[in-house]
Length: 164
Image 1 (cartoon, rainbow, N blue to C red):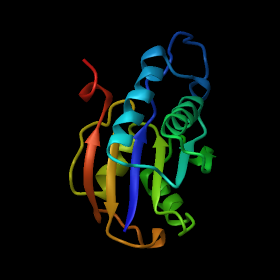
Image 2: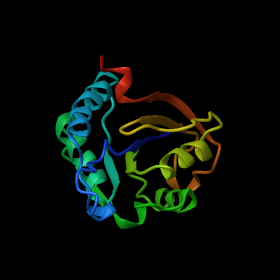
Image 3: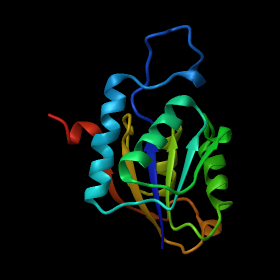
Image 4: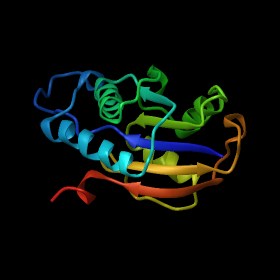
């Protein structure tokens, strides 16, 4: 079975309202949340063998930050097509992933990441908050065969669950 972890980027920095959306980084809370969520993933024994991320700065920083805290030294693919894309395009991207990968982190944006989660599983989520992570087990052994509503949600976690 393939495992997919849908991850919304950490809290973005809005201190410069004139900054291009694609180039916005993370604020202090977002940076702190990365360590918190990586530790939660470690506790669950989760380690990806590939990270796919939007190429937007805040998603890249989230992907790199999680990788660093987890001790992940594998490939991180920054894909511009994952920046504000339709869930169907995300599904197509996943279907074209090399079959040697079994556990994939997909770092993206809302509302698309929430919509994608809701398309893959019948368990509805109203909103994946910043740095929210949805762990899915796909009922297939190949990425090419991934279809909508065939995943089982293993967990849904987000920073406020772990901070005081």
